[in-house]
Image (cartoon, rainbow, N blue to C red; front, side):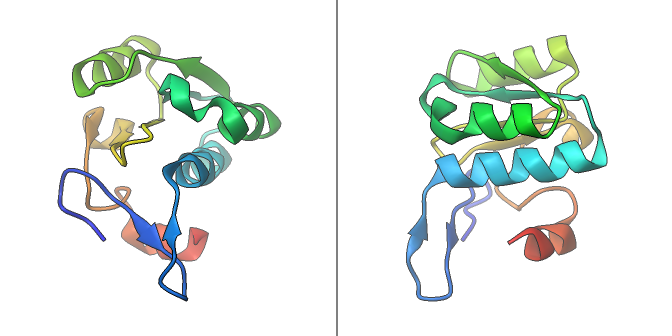
Length: 113
């Protein structure tokens, strides 16, 4: 479900999938496309996201939460992806901006999930 500001997902039973799972999943898949890249995340997402990013050869960078802070840090680090617990997802290929309309390649999102 997207409101073009945030993006949330539900499983096949209609159960909400928490953002801390999604940010790790998106990070993993972006790192498969661009190994060694930086991923920006908010401080609430350290539970599994740091491990996933490290396991897939990425560089996790924790940023202050908020649209302006995440975008600025993504530009500074040339990060491939950034995610927040709030459901905001930011993409290098989308001008370091957030989009609630899935990642830039929606077909890939369906495959990832």
